[in-house]
Length: 362
Image: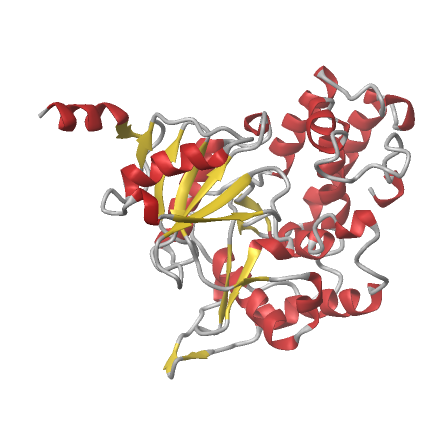
């Protein structure tokens, strides 16, 4: 009886708006610098039949802001649980309640893994087998086509009759507020004044809003490491839904090519391949709109793209580029973020002298 009461005290339903299904919440905090003890406590709650001494762990190091560890007992990682710990102060950039809602929404449409629980500073979810793509994979016609199809599928998620507004301007406003309140002193001399940035943001909103790009459900963060290719099932799935939400369709397409290489482009380690990337970018809208019926394990899996068709104009993704770069440029300007992440060497985005960022790329 006492054990049952204690378990009830440890686990409660996550607060916040109604979701597709109740998500258990555990009052456990996992230390960023020492993940394993907290992760194993969560595994005891989620998989009580696992013997602690048999639990294996694997850390993933590709993440920029969050920490991720896999916990499993089978060699093939069946029933593997991923424990993701939020980065320091990222709640100022990311609406975590909205992230959980997006997770559940995408799961309901077959576009996301199972969400097992949330905890004080993170969440646990199902491991999806496959390979995280790299920039070189974007040029492979088969994978390029699968990425376009998956994006089109997500873009067809309906809004239940409502008319959603794009989150781009809301995000920019939030980031700009952070910049104004806590601008990074080491960068303030190298960038325009706040008043100039405000005028440029107003100009961007005025002109980009006139492009009439459809507002659809978007991932908004499609760098390659957020795309998992499962060769056995012949499909790709997108992961990490921190920035997902309704946005301009052109933004999601342009964003994919803008940051598909992650930080490799900023670091100059990707190599000079602008022509193939531009070629694929110009073909992306056409591939999305093709009537495609892929065959998976002998079964036809039709994807209706009717609501996700894009304008045939080949330059459609290009107008989203200024908005995307300004959005992340504001994050770079925000004082705490570079100091706690980049200037400590956790992400090498600064120049060789560790004082001058590559603003030419922004």
